[in-house]
Image (cartoon, rainbow, N blue to C red):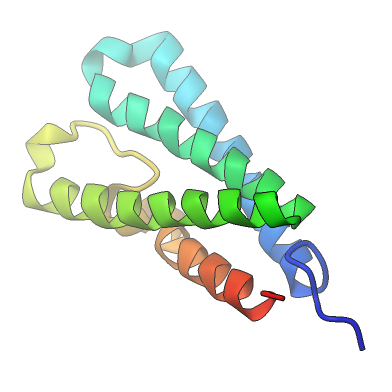
Length: 130
């Protein structure tokens, strides 16, 4: 039986969820930056950064080659660190984040999926390692 690749089997669902988050975070950031950037520039820039990370993770997981796996590992690690750092800072100093980002409060506004997603992604990378 062939070993699963990052974009096959359950990996397809993972790629799909990342694609949805890339689209959601990108659209949210684009609207926020275009209409209210002066209100919360750090929060809106972080949402745009999160969207870029989600796009990288989506593409890298879908492709699943050697280089793509490395890109996915870096993207997922940055995502997890971002969720933990931004989540902690947004709770410790709410005034620093006058508007929520995708990663605020550990992704509470998105059902904590931004916190769980990189953990699942890193597990999937390890499980499908050759």
